[in-house]
Image (cartoon, rainbow, N blue to C red; front, side, top):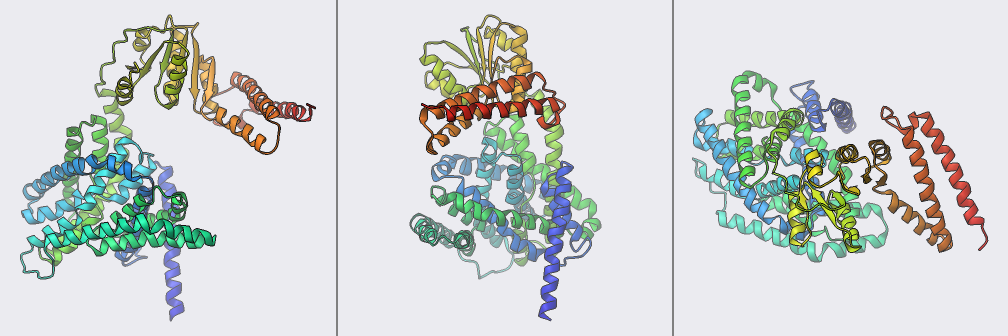
Length: 604
């Protein structure tokens, strides 16, 4: 009997993995994102699809650990000093968004959907507290976790996690029956605060010594077990005190962000995080009750769009009130308009305390789950159609009047541009600096460095900078398309100007060469050659010979790049598809190796 039960569990595991492996790559290939793939796979194998699973809630409860681990990894990358710097965004922007969205959602629920104001509050709470799992996954896939807009969304999510205890207390207060079990609000807040203090104390004085002891054993599995213990222990402590388990994991991650074991912990947790987060999305897809949706189709679908619109409008207004641009505010509204997984907890608590009926609870769960399913589609629509339109039509800040024209023009004042400008000015050269980042421009001016705001892709900006009479143009922008466009434009406006341009990769080098750049500087090539030289020196090769080898390799590579750029064809996606380029590359490598061997064999 036990063997049969074990075999059945193994079959379920195989079905879950198989559904994910089939659906997720397919949806990614179609440009629909991995989250929608997981949700569709869960819907297909769930109780309202092929009925291979009967109880999606049991899967969701286990898989919520994926969200917990995700927040732990985010915490590892966010040092306490950085978190302190986000305090205004967490408590200021977070409180502003929750307040505006809460009011709008209650109004829609009460006046448009016909709920009582108590029910409208409960349903609205399911949307005010957004889905951490889906939003974090979307930000990760789009590479926006460390961007300014991404950091603001993460700050808002952290504030929403802090609202769990107060919201449950309000639900208990709204109950029409006499509930004797809940403690006073001040007592719950005291317990939650005490748990956070306990976690901070343990993180500061216990965790690092523990990991140092385990590191001496040189057993990788012990470090993995300890990492899981920290994440799950912190989550359990917070959950036992009535707070969010994800909040506990996040705090533990922040406390370990300065630890020398940070990268080891991240590597140990990452596989579990990915699998469990995917399992969570599968569970959410399974929990969508299609029979209930079809039975109340008009009401549920109308409720989904009405509540998502109200939530999105509130998010947009909060973003605009905090001085975000129209494009950024719209992006945040589309990403965060959905309901959250915490809605299931709020609805269950409200139904148990007779604040809402069981039918309203079922409808509320269906509405929130459907918002999660629709959210990836809406994000894709926004990315492909709405964002490009508003990006074109948004009124850009007027460019600065360039009152000085110097023989050298520098476009791009990021990390690379600042170093180049510093070297040139220290050598006595005057440089006209142009950048499109307002924060960089204002920051440099505070340091006494003159820079101008403007879009160098526009010919009138280059004209005002005096490109027709300039001797040199240096393009340090990290955006491939922008750099190529500026080089091409400048070459047309001044055929005699000397152009130096930053290249993202080897193909960009060829493109810049054909656009008219005299020198193309690859982002990582110089540092790679220097590292190779240091490696040769540490391996015992004479310092002078190592220097000659690196110089030889550098010069030979420049010659090869020039030859390959002349035969470069943009229609080939890889250099190995171009037979002429392959021939040049092989001949160059052979000649370079012979020359390096001659240097090594030469007597001092």
